[in-house]
Image (cartoon, rainbow, N blue to C red):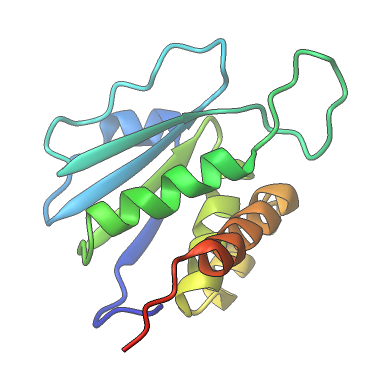
Length: 148
């Protein structure tokens, strides 16, 4: 599923994302806790996808919202709608777990290199990455087949 060019992936904390100003054709995946106000990211992004889920890998409290296939599908759909950006900026509260998990999941399913991201963000959320991969697999399985 790899496209012509690989965009630069930038993983930030919420604080840094709110200060960030895009300089190229850039899109943003903004991740926050469900009870938090949305981050105030730049209006200069070509598009912003906002996701809300807790930074957990399993439900500890009944109110915990786990990263789910619907979140992953929203990310995949967003990238299909905004193909070939120069840069994808991803952020969560601290830029340590959720946003690197999404970034690594994108790399996995699109055939982009993961080594640098894995080294820079060793605390990535394993559930998020796993669900990103599963959602892409399910999309491929469920896709209608075309016959010539």
